[in-house]
Image 1 (cartoon, rainbow over the protein chains, first blue to last red):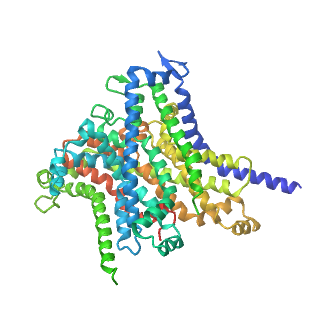
Image 2: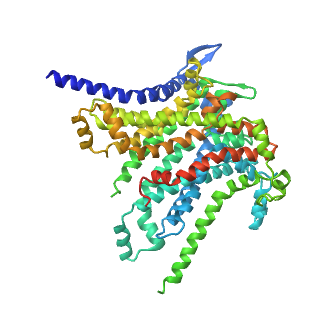
Image 3: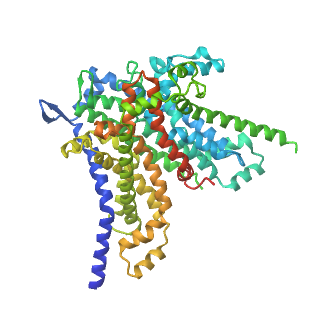
Length: 309
Length: 279
């Protein structure tokens, strides 16, 4: 009796010792700061006195002419940034994965390694590489375009208001294409051989086989990629900060929520940093990400699981 | 037999497409590295040519090594990355062992609590993190970065390691217990060596975002003495923006360590990413 209680108590201490470090670091540095940021969004500061203002910061952010225009512009750009990723990254990623999964392909691992390589590099390196390449000063992009007879298409894409966001989105797609490619490639390989054989017996092969048999089976992987892309895009900052600066030029054409948050929190040029409006923007970003992730987990993910084997 | 030419043509098409995209992926990086070894005139007149003996120049590297403190940036990045990895792996393995090995009240809740961090980015808490670091005097210290990156990496590490902890045979652990080993010894001597491959995968995954991050070094540790290589490169290039030799050399220096590590570990990384589906 006493033996078993001491044994049990000893076991409980182990559990605590094993769990404590991870829980402590995670709670103190991630969960509490997140909660504190949400709380700060309900306060404001005048002459170094913090006072509770309820949702007033949010009304200012959404409606006050000094803030609202920048905010809606950043949100709109962020949505476009995400849509361009979805429209380019997923189809190209799926196509590359389908090509890689061709049976008995020579040089498969060399292709795989090289195409995934840009994903490993930092935003700083990627941002500057493309800034240099697209720079009209250097002239690499125009001479490359000239080689395929398209020189007339060239423009200073990162510097024009109507092309900067598209250009920067495509740079980001270029960097991250490896992730959808790998995940879809893995999903394609995990389709059982029997399914493919059955399709071939029924005379479904080639492209038809891809559209009718494989694509429905890799939908869960596409869903996962979409949600990962969404979270990454609505949290993006580095690439735009590096190549377009904190002001996300030209004329805020590439401003997204991350750069807007940074400017608001730290201030820029003549405007002072504002901790509470920064927290308000972070809270809006948190709610956007959380609601989409919840929607994905509760609705899409659950429905897709029914089609798995 | 009749299908053979069509088959061969299709093969050729596949190689053309993949080869074409491979070029798109590698050419920009190659261009930067190549031009970093040329003199200024050659960079502008023949950007697409390999360096020749007459155009070869290391002037960019000389500027970088003289003006920027890249060795110290590199060392800072190394300390931060290795430190964070150590804590992510140790704490993550301990927690996932506890979560999968023992039944206790709150087990499921704790699992979900940690899983939340996989989806919600730690960046959104930056304002409060900075406030906390300022209060504790940790601003401009590498330790602040290590702490933040450990918190950032733990959720995914626990998630992946838990999956592997479940596969360790219960007989082995129970045999150890019968022999009188404590739970700590069971974990460190019996279980940890068996999940080493999973730890390597988690290490590679967690390493990349830490090494490449710009946000937290910029906000928490922007002082000259604590700059990481990512921030150091960004600031250096900002100052030397018109010195193309220096910019290209700085970029090459910054991307080389990652590229070398990637080429060594790419097989393991890709296997981890595709969770064993790649044969």
